[in-house]
Image (cartoon, rainbow, N blue to C red; front, top):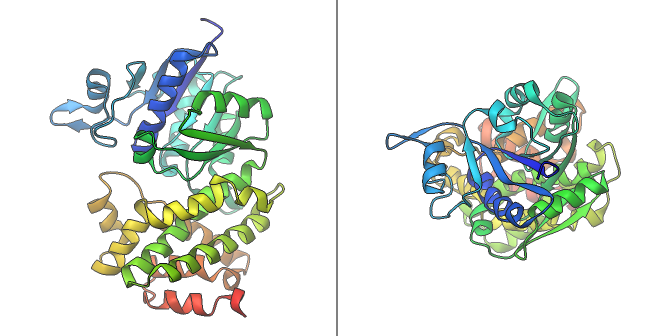
Length: 350
């Protein structure tokens, strides 16, 4: 048992809890992994009880994934240093805004041989330009990182409805480890080497989903939404080719991390839903996030802001009108009807 890899899940929200259920069941049947999975929980008090206590006693995350039982071998730990101590495999699945602080804590007892995988759909930017979340984790911890992105609405995954997903891993052996850790008959995984392309697709699709929500709020219909999906995919591919250090191929865009994730996010998911409410209610993104998401974070508008800053620095704003329109409508007061004008005048049509 001492040679078995210990797994730590960093995050316990809606998606994190759904993944924890898969991992918990898989490690219980595997000879490669320790049967106990530690899951770091941001401690909250619900009805007078700690969330970590509820998970460990009732085996359910009643706030973020109610109605779905977690395996008893998934142990909630509120202290990130304790949760990560001795871990060989890290699964990062938390809002990207908290990555820096969490990594600083993990570093206190990190095994040099540890590896990680990011399920975080977001990007960051600083003075040097675009920053992928897996790169930030690698810089902070010095561990090799892979990513997992795909058409995976958390509640449907938790219901064990069939879906696909994509792992991007530059290290084939690590890709195999993560596939064994997470694949099930209803959660099928393809492993590709274009790690950066997979990750950037997972971030950018949230911007496209916001645009799809604008369409729903305006009552535009499925033809318009299909145009948003197509044009959004075109901008995703163009952006990836400009900003990814490694190869970017259309075949990766055709994996679950690309076209499939854009489609499912444009018809389901929180970004589409909040964007529709943004149009219909006139409330700000921040207010709607607070009212509608039960403590979860909205990635699409924030990602559009990071993308806009990078595009502006590179003088490329005119080449990505859909991405730019989403940002300006969400944060700069641009009229929502301008979104349709943006589609009508898209460079793809000129």
